[in-house]
Image (cartoon, rainbow, N blue to C red; front, side):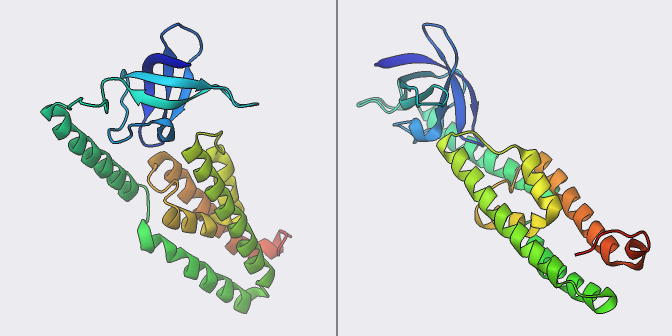
Length: 227
């Protein structure tokens, strides 16, 4: 049955929002993939028509959503809307670029930390003993972390429940940060969210400090466990 409501809130960066039904009741989740006229990005306070789906074990969500008055046959958008949309898209792109630039190393420069880690492990091995187990741990942790990022990105695109950011931070802290860097670069996931990246880079720093401490004479003196 076709229902109508108002788009109460919309997160354009993550591509989802919530609809307040006209007849009252709980808000309905809607993902960008549910829209039948996605040429114009949805905006809060817009009127929508939609079909209510209730997947088993999941929250109610909208499908076949359409912005009322937009994309209908014979309907023409106003000149102001044609001008505003490119400007809004350019502003979003600029905000994302600025956020990423302020949050730490970006793009290919950040990936240089991976060969830097390899050099660090080699140096520690030459000075203080074998680091092969540590290298293997980083590879395993990175594979798990990359897969987790990929799963979380897919969940975001499909409107499913997301992985808490603290879990992604913990994976990086435990040695999976090289895989996280590759995922941020190749999958374009969590690569422009400033608050997330600030904590992420802190976990990278803490991990490298812990690595150096574990293999240093100071760590061996205090009986810290090593790989």
